Amino acid sequence: MKKLTLGFLIILFALLPMNHEQSYGANNTREKDTLRILTSFYPIYITTLNITKNVPGVAVTNLTPPLTGCLHDYSLTTKDIKKFVGADIFVANGAGMESFLDRIIKQYPAVKVVQLSKGIPLIKGDGAEGDNPHVWVSIFNAIIQVKNLGNALQEIDPAHKNLYQKNTAEYVLQLETLRRKMHAALKPYQGKKIVTFHEAFPYFAQEFKLEIAAVVEREPGSQPNARELAKTIELIKRSKIKALFVEPQYPALSAQTIARETGAKVYILDPVVTGPEQPDAYLRIMEKNLATLEKALKN
Ligand SMILES: [Zn+2]
Image (tube, rainbow, N blue to C red; front, side):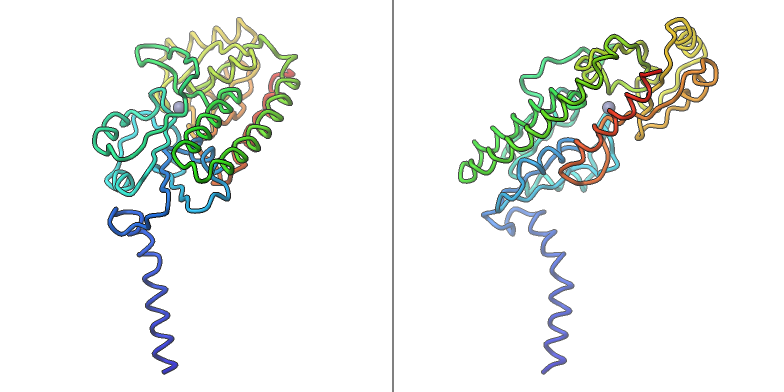
């Protein structure tokens, strides 16, 4: 009898995670009272974790693996697409970050799509690719995104309206506090010229009145040709730019060359597209960015 019970338990435990996967993957087996929220990528996932904190019956899943980074040219895998089948809500950045969005809206009309960049004035991208989608890198815009999500969830899930309201207010307060701290600390550096290696920072620079003098590798991984490189080096020397900002997610091969040629130093500035899957990740990463900027810009 004892043996039988143990055997049964082992089988039960072996089945548990599988059942969980299935309940998410297919409509017919999923629990009716669970609100399934799918987020498009890391910063949107972190925002959603904050707004759904302690809300009963809500499951948040991130569509793309946490190491994906930005979704420029991201192709959905079969595994990604399956996640839409069981989802009630898809939370996207919008502003062109999710190039697959139109296709998903057509293919899964039952999934409610919430685009968090609604109402944020967009900066034109360099070249022909449309608007720059990296709005969350500005704390001011991140707060708008948080409020957009809070409002949307209150509407979609009115039973938990008070909780969404409370979570939104709490997170906005944390972000506002950090924002004030950053503005006070960076005020002396307004108008400073910086060089970045990917188009992630225009909104951040706009908020803190920094001037992006050059973006060296606009597309992550694309390398400047010899003429572009020489032009950038000349610009950095002429403008006496002391700091180059690379991102932890995208190794910039040209950064070391430019640093060697100009004497400028290379620092890491994080656009919050990868990181720990913790609700306070955005706040922590921005705190680190602030420390980096203070160190880099005081020279
Ligand atoms: Zn990006």
